[in-house]
Picture (tube, one colour):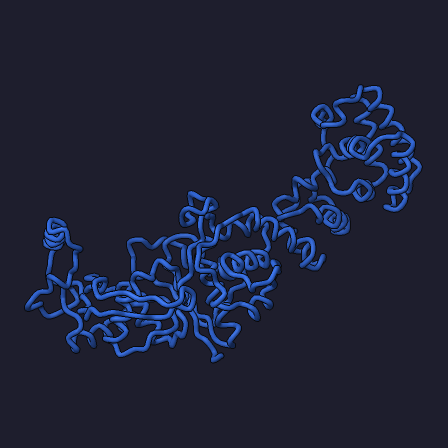
Length: 468
């Protein structure tokens, strides 16, 4: 394949969520797998809707997931002279004209169409002698309606009739171009080979094709991505449905590798059972032809599962520990790296994202108060009288007191205790776990005890015994 030049062109009107970042990712993958370039372009022509800080946020979001751009960020607001030059070409060719109508006159035209039960088309009301365009009025493209047939790299063969093609504004009265005009000029000037964007633009493609022809341009490859759907699958994902700021996931301690993996598999797979992909694997395997035509359901539970898979098996331990540094509980502040690394090694199997670290590890750093409800609400333990619980815990203490607290010895002693007490692990091990952690769940018991150490473990068992 020839080197591709792709682009991601967001508007700075708020935060990026998974749908926007997935679009950027697919464009980035196409560029990288062909040895091409990925351009970041900021489409900031709608100054009314622009949100302060959005451009920095867009860059921070892409950097976090590892999508690096080769050119940019390029801002459309810095290119107004270029759009004016292209607009003048259309005016000179008789393919654009100044729009002389007031909003009230336009509304009257719409009312006439509605009364006649016909669709409103501006081309039915073209002025016979439009004024010379001086930049103070909107400039409209003069369309030449016709049939169109085109190939979408994702959606396949598409077509439409002339009835959907109308005259549309290309330059606003404030001197800024509209999206419909600016993106075509930018893509041409930047030699973009693939336009990868949401399927919401499919309906506008015929008028874009009409404009390409008027400008004497060959369209790039068009690829329309289906929506990321809300969990219920009945509508496009929105803020109401859990579409969070992509950087919220960074703050919650999700891994960028897992996020890229998750986004890439939202509506794409390589026809295998593989679910865990590194960025390098995605660059090699991704293909626009394998993007599904239907919407991809957003399921945050799958992201959580995938992040856990990356934590447990895909990231080197030393790297994982470095990334965890901002997520430890406050009570861990007085402990050294060696101890915290031991704790991370134990909780790693249960950790799904770093924000869970305080809940999973706090008992390693502080003695939590005895919570009677942990026993009274336990399915097995609540059935036993206090005397029996006390006897079991005393037997466990006596055995553990003789241990040097290495994992092998602890494992042997715990198994021997099962035989001596004739109890199930769900009873005996749960009782010891509650006494030593005061937590409803914990990692493997022998591993946990080995990290806690002998003195702390026995002290906590004594505290529990006092309540029995």
